Structure formats: structure tokens, C-alpha cells
Length: 210
Image 1 (cartoon, helix red, strand yellow):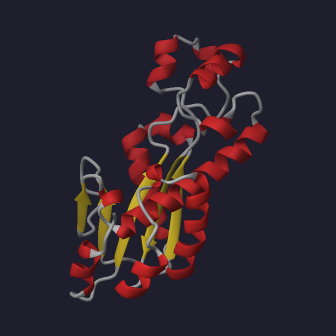
Image 2 (cartoon, one colour; image 1 turned 45 degrees about the vertical axis):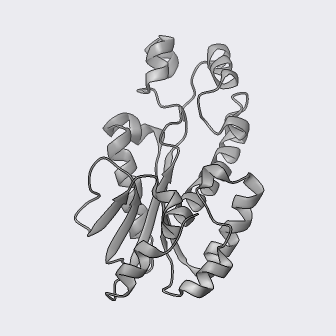
Image 3 (cartoon, rainbow, N blue to C red; image 1 turned 120 degrees about the vertical axis):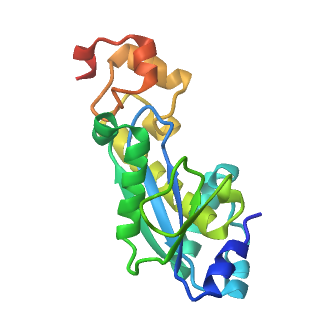
């Protein structure tokens, strides 16, 4: 289970710590969403309040929704995103970094140190620790994972109403048989990532994508 070992090391040095994670990096459609979470240096309170927090992928939707309320009740949260058009323009990794920077900018107080679920290179010039499977190691990262996932899932449900027929409310823009069948039937819509590998594999004409 995620713990506070990494956070406490920084808290003892008087630093403000933010955990960061993203959701939607591997999707075919919709934005990549990042969340930054600044937990207070109160280990006992956090251990009790967020005892069920974990990597968002290991939790059921109802558990994630309940935990969002608990996280927002004890922490400050920032969310940032990069839409499909920006992903197509600059690429998924730069767009992910952009979303993370926007999430950090949305925090009421700038952090002194970042804990980040593993990314291939440092995020900006912040002092930071990038952790492999960090959402299972750090409670701050796990909390950010949950916030990002729930925020993005809610957004994809809204986009399902705006772009009906694709099943975004069910698959949240990820590559599934249902999603591929919808693209074959309807062609891509404006929130599809037209530079994404699946569209190259599907050999869709550019005029359909536009």
C-alpha cells in the first residue's frame, strides 16, 4: 500500500511536497489529465483518513469517487490537462509534461519538492523524485492518481453526450473493440488523437480525421 516515507523525509526538511500523476496518456481520444496533490504534514491523520487510497487502477469507480471527497477534504489539489489537439501538435510526452505543469500552477501554494509517478525525464527544474510504480509507493502520488482518473472519467462522460455513438462513457477513450467498431462506423471525431498510432494502423484517410 502507498505510504508516507518519501513525504516525511521532505517534511522533516521543511519542504512543501506535491505528488503528481496523470490519466489518459494511452487513450485514443480525449485529453491527458494530470493532478497535483499537496498533502498536509500530518501522518497520523492521513493514515486514518486515506487508509483505502491506492493506485487508481486497483480501485473500483465507487471507491475512487469516495476517495476524491476525502482527498479534497484534507489536501490542496491542482488539475491540468492537454487536449487531443495539443497532443497531436506536440506529442504525447510533451503534452503530459504540459498537463503536469498546469496542474502544479493550479495549486494554491507552489511546492518545493515533487514526487512523480515514473516519467522518462525530469519535469522542469523542480527538485523531484521519480518513482517506478509511484502510485503504489507514495500516498501523495496515489492521491494524484485518483484525482486525475476521476476528473478524466467525468470529463469523458460529458464528452460522450457531446459526441454520441462512440461509447466514451464506457471505455473513456481507450482502445477497445467497441471503440474501434465505432470509429469504423462513424469515422474519428474532433476529440480523437489523429496522430495516434491506432489511426495509422487503421489507415484512416486524413479527410475523415479532419
